[in-house]
Image (cartoon, rainbow, N blue to C red; front, side, top):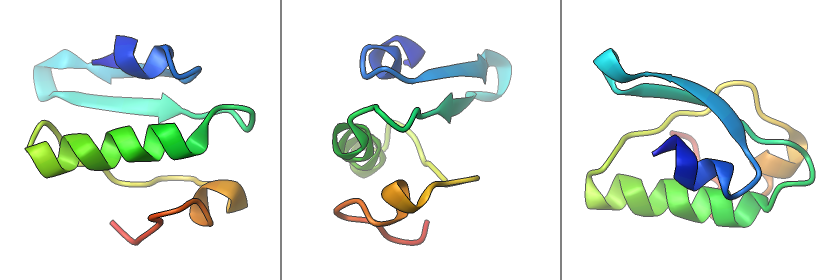
Length: 67
């Protein structure tokens, strides 16, 4: 799964045993594509996601909502 997000210019790490990942989304990444992928995977039941430390750009991206 991380490979998909890495292709969108994110970095991250995961704990496979628990099915957890943490993504670092740089300011020059395509925030909307990343958010769309997160929301799509959530709707399909592939994962659940939560926001941690976010920037103003992330907070104002289309579809932004409290998770």
